[in-house]
Structures are given as C-alpha cells and as structure tokens.
Length: 415
Image (tube, rainbow, N blue to C red; front, side, top):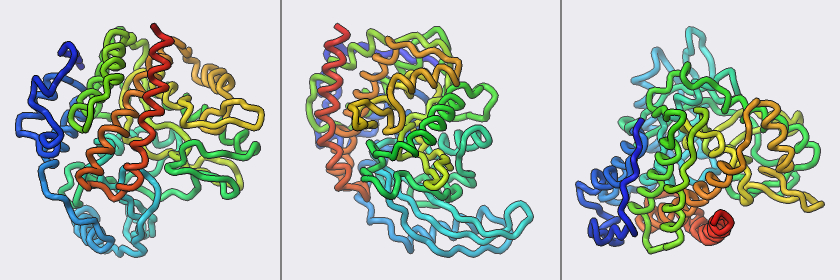
C-alpha cells in the first residue's frame, strides 16, 4: 500500500479542474481519474468513488418499492439457493441514515436441513451519504464470527447485478438499540441508559472493542482491504485522502476551515505502530442488546471498516456528540461508561496503550470526515434526490457547523 499526498498548495481545484456546483452534479468522464491522482487512497474506496461519479449523471431513480425489491430478491435466490424455497413477511426496517433495509423470512434448505431463517437485505440507495463496500462488510462479518457477536452473512451482490444497488443479505438479529423506558435519538447517537444497563453493557462494549483491535487481520480472509505498513503514515494519509476527495466531489460551497484542517492533518500524520481492524462506527446505535439480560446480541454496520490505527476508533467512540452526561456532570462514552474508566478498561483488557497525541490527531480527522459527510455528501445527495432519507440528511447538514467549531478549537489547542 502506497499513499502519497499530492501538494496542490491552496487547493483551488476550481482553477485546476474547472469545478463548479453544476459540474459536480454531472462530472466529466475523466474527473474520477483526476481525483485519484490528487487524492490516492485504498483500492476498494477508489472503485466505490469511481462508481459513484459514473452513476451521478444518471436520472433520478424511482423510489424502490417493497414489491420491486421482493421481485429482485426472488430472482437472486433462484440463482443462489439450491432446491425449493419460500419468501414471506417482507417488510421495511426503520433506522439508519444511509442504507435501505428490508427484512424477510426464508424457508429453505440450509446445509442439508429444512429450516426457516429471518434475514435482512442491506442495500445502498441510488447515492449514499457514505460510499461504502458491501463486500468489505461481508468479509469483516465472516472474519469476526466467533470473536464478537455478529450476524451470519449469507450472500453479497457487490456490483448491483441482481438488486437495484449493491446489497448484502445477512441474518436478522433480535434486540433493541435503546432501552424502552428512556429517550432514543436518530441513529441511536447520544442515547441514555439506566445505571443497571450501563453497568452490564459498558464492560461488554470495551471487551468487544479490545477483541476487534487485537484480532490478527493477517490471518483473516480480507482480500478487499489494503494493509498499511507499520512505521509509516500510510494509514492516516489514506483516510485523509479519501475524505479530501469526497469533499471535492460532493461539496456545494467553500469552507476554509476544512482547508486549514486538511493541511494540518497532512503535516502531522502519525506513524502507525500496530495494524488493527477498525470498525469505523463503533458506538451506541450500532449494536443490538437484550434488555432483560443486558447482553449485547450483535454488532452491525461494519461498512466503514478498514485496517489501520486503533486510535481512529478510540477517537471516534469518545466524540462528545456520541455520548452524554450523567446527573453528576460526568461524560459517558456512548452513554455507557465514564471517559477515564473507558481508557483504563480498554488498556487493561486489550493490553494496548492509548497515546493521547494520536487521539488528538484522530479527533481532528474524525471531525473533518464528519463535516465532509454532513456538509458535503448530505448536501449533494439531497440536492440530487438520491436517497430515501432526504429529510434526515438535510437535518444532518445543520450539525456540520457545530462539529467544525469543535475541530477549530482542537486545532487551536494544537498550535
């Protein structure tokens, strides 16, 4: 894996490439290649972003109906399931800001046994808030089976051959994202838990994260992942380049603080000391738990997974917007565990150190990526009418300025 950031000075890409808002709606055929030269990143992400730009000029698609998706599923299963099968109880699943999800019941012969299995189709909209890989999601779920709770993954249509867009089919998992007697929030972010649930869920939250970060990725079948080298800045620069590219492809305005942040992130990219699997969105809302027992049943949404620096996950998990405060004013990581206790338990369970300097770097990078998604990609997707979640995505745009202010404060503290 080799990532070299090209220096474009002040990065006035409008002058370099002739980009404006209308151009981003229907980019020229060679735009993706020019973006790859300017912002080289991981192979799988480059393919995803090429696909996004190729398809951006297509007409706005009709909303996917339950009947249409059921017909696609029927055709898909006829090609992938041996013997007779019956599909029933197709229904939409709520939640999620970026994917279309349909649950269904499949009666079929599974490994020689006639059985009934509850399943989920997880499919991209016409254009997503995050261009992510269903193929990578499948690989990570398979890799972590038996290590942390994950659903059983069955099939992937990574090119959208059978379904309107790339899709993953996996097992439906029981559980809830928030307790029944407390306020829940969109996507589960910042949800509150009772003290009893905090005690039971908090320890599992740390133990599962430690298991992910200490997992031997070199022994797993992860062909769509690039492996960064330790002793280099490849991992940090690959993530930075991807975000810079997405910003230039999607944004609808100038936002100078992002230029300042990107230049700082480039100059201060940290050396990788250990390659870990990074979940990418490890937080409340992305695990399901059994409320009576307080056990985590399954971890979902592996779509941002990559190989890199564990501090990227640690900094993401401890973002203020993903947690809340208890009655005494103590900040709770993901609403579950006090910050100092989170670090103490993580170090104890994983055997890995927590470097505060690298944490600060990845907090800035995570904030940068969030602003890119909310102010750049959300704007473009809503403008073009490419998602079933237009209202939610438009709402997310408003969060960009608060996140950017936090990023500005962090940069001032570093200089």
